[in-house]
Length: 174
Image 1 (cartoon, rainbow, N blue to C red):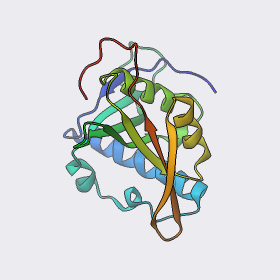
Image 2 (cartoon, helix red, strand yellow; image 1 turned 90 degrees about the vertical axis):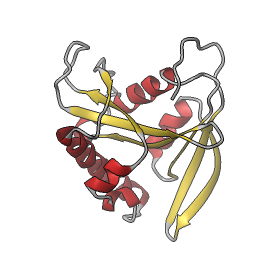
Image 3 (tube, rainbow, N blue to C red; image 1 turned 45 degrees about the vertical axis):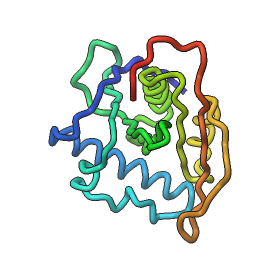
């Protein structure tokens, strides 16, 4: 797997081209996940652009281009999260354009997200239990797998929690 140094930047889904790129990448990434887990009813696959934009999420994107000075290349992937009422943060989605699979984009995005939130803030995330690449990613970052659950017939999801991290200074609020 190659690693990238692509810039990470906040995404504004009020910008039409950005929102369209996020929508396109999300649908493509979730189509691959649907094949991996054998379930084509993933809600994001049917989500309209308007529904996506209406979500109360914060967004970061990885811009392809090869060096940290390039800010106008194509969007390679994104991560979106929200703060929960209990103070934790929930990773709502982490998607990589299939054209950029196996290039370290998901790791880059997850690392950038964790660097932007307070170390004492726990994280939760879920993914298809049969999505081996996503499961391995979260475990590699120290997320602990909790109970699997089935929100719909034929779909088994794996839940993960990342406990507060210690020794990380300079975090901003999520």
